Amino acid sequence: MDTYHERAALRSRLQGARAQGLRIGLLPTMGNLHTGHIALLEDLRQACDISVCSIFVNPTQFGAGEDFDRYPRTLPQDQEQLAAAGCDLLFAPSVAEMYPHGLTALTTVTVQGLQEGLCGAHRPGHFQGVASVVCKLFNIVQPDVAIFGEKDYQQLAVLRRMSQDLDFPLRILAGATRRAEDGLALSSRNQYLRPDERQRAPMLYRTLQQMRDAILSGIDDYRMLESSATGLLEKSGFRTDYFSIVDADSLEPAGTQTQHLTLLVAARLGETRLIDNISVNLAAAR
Ligand code: PAF
Image 1 (cartoon, rainbow, N blue to C red):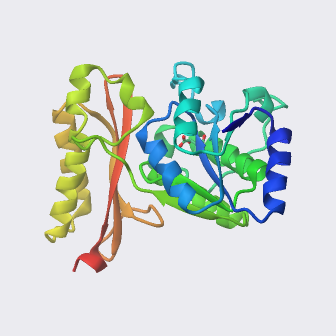
Image 2 (cartoon, rainbow, N blue to C red):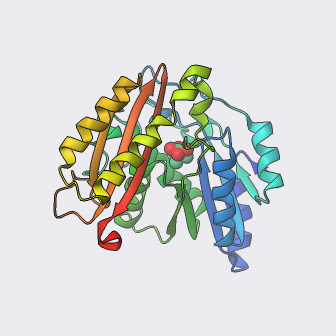
């Protein structure tokens, strides 16, 4: 696997591949890779001829007081994992390479309607930072296909909409959430959890499953389910940013007519913010 730190060098390498008619696939990451990322790479490799993974801890998607400085940076270990998993190219730029004009007066992308609620309400500017950096990565790599994890459900929705609205000629794949045996969704941030917090963390997924089962049993008072889920989580020591039952596409609050629902949660255990989600297709279930 070859590693590139500069846009120009990566671009010229990819031009050659494109000229040979090879399909290029992109897996954008912030590094500190775990088996969830490697599973996404495996899914991506099924859909392309040349796989490119990017590792960039993007400062513009972190708010003041968030974990940008302590976000784990583990490039040598990541390189080993990617090479062993058959990744073809790694793009690992510096902040100066990605933002040559600095971070204060940036050209940005906003995805109105999808970026403001849920995590966007608790992390102002986050999705603008994500959409803008992914837009740059799409322009640098010009992939035929890109993959993002379903764990970051709102991110996936924002990036799908951005890609449609800005006419990127590529396919976006959604990679299923990979979980530890006890159900906790794999995330680089899980390593921040203290041992007692790690023991309690699977309650997040269990609560999602419980509310999903309630919906499948016919309960459609979604606001009541949201507050009962929040109560359960708070009792177990979580501080809940939100537990929301929304339309899977629009991310608007679900109502009794909604057929395809997604249950989304963001909650803090100690210093660590965890997110997870589960989808229910009532049309298919009935
Ligand atoms: O999901 C992530 O790791 C990041 O938000 C992404 C998509 C790589 C953009 O920085």
